[in-house]
Image (cartoon, rainbow, N blue to C red; front, side):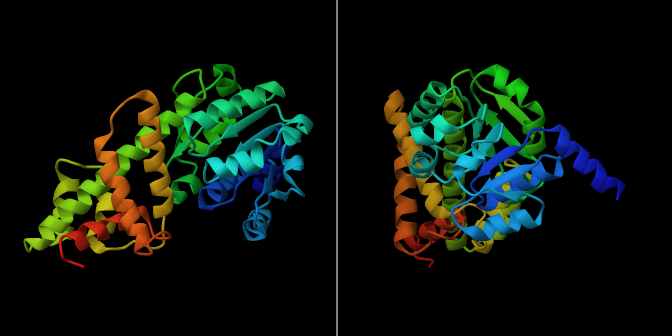
Length: 304
């Protein structure tokens, strides 16, 4: 009982948080805020995730306007189109009383520039705060948060950011810098996944067990979660349940290509990876984990 009373006291002391987007990442993040003592008002297009969060102690918002009446809003949507449709509505922002919006979606720098400008027109602080980590990391409150925008907002929201992640990286005063940083991280990830996919196909074709190759790589020259985690998925051909869907991976590759074009930076590997993802999508793997792009390498090697 004492623990419950303490949590209630914390929720009375801390500002309410509006939360938009309850996919697997959003649910984990909202849950972390609840455990930290925040009152969380949630909204999602489909009602199932809303009820799941209500069962954990959140309040259901009647509409997005109610979310933007909270002092702070956190959003975690899938892509530029969803953010534009739902959150860049001038009427919504004109009626909002929120002081700050933290957008944790992986979106284009161009959209981030537009979003920050539109929020500024309506007196709302805007912080781009995309995150690193899969759903289980979000649920544990152990994300890395890539933040860019007014340093004052970062300092003001430190407790909230600390509830969501293990570390917040302030990467610049312009929000689009965080969006670009997240794109570069995901670009590095997809290149690593493609490299492991091709290496495992080559090993398998030569009679070496992919699981042995991955153990070798992750225990020696490439230690860490990327080669160990995704390498194991590739070696075992284990792509479900998806931690990050393949179709979202393609979105991130396309964001990298667009950013490269904008900055006049060639990304030749990105074209190869994009085509591999398109081929995987054409073979019905949209809902599988993006590690399923490995099946393209196997098929090209005649192993499928």
